[in-house]
Image 1 (tube, rainbow, N blue to C red):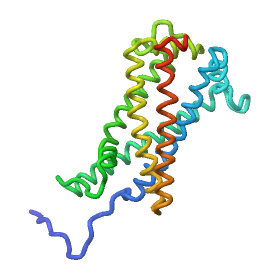
Image 2 (image 1 turned 90 degrees about the horizontal axis):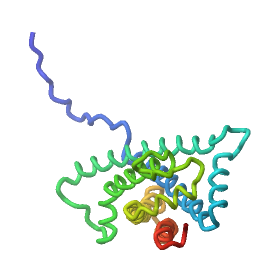
Image 3 (image 1 turned 30 degrees about the horizontal axis):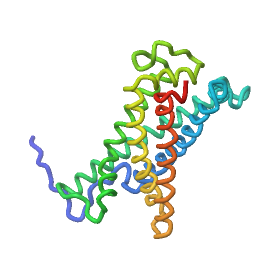
Image 4 (image 1 turned 90 degrees about the vertical axis):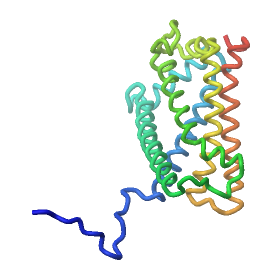
Length: 238
């Protein structure tokens, strides 16, 4: 017995997606702001290196002993890592979902109404995200796990200052770090502004505030982090 496919009944709507564009943008905005806050605080922590080796190592040790004995050693760091990993999965998943839907909706046409710089940043977000992801993997292997060849052959667990300086004495690693910070800053600048808009900051004044905040955060992260490998290469940090 053969079966015949019936055409869809007139007036029926296609099945709804598991997650709407609204919620995908909202999730991306929230997780993006969490990442922005983490990156800014991480940059602030990195600047402790200018207080010297002892102060920087003590700061790194303090992070691992937060809330002891309520939590075990490095407990806060592991909670933070799990939260960031969940945010990463949600952020990347929603980014890919929105990118695919946007390409399908607009076809070969580009989005109109964007200024040249704004358009370039918007279109490069996925590519810059990939670069940042590769940098994060290398950074963890280099300065957290100490796995060669990403890490130096003098890597020592607990010696945060010495490990960082030794790593940035390699010109290629320092150059990759600087490039990654430039890409990260551009990603932050557009991402924070887009997140504010997606979360409802659509008024003219709020949009201007979002632009200023996004620019200041991106600039601070860029200058603060890039100053460290520059200082190492020029002999200011040894």
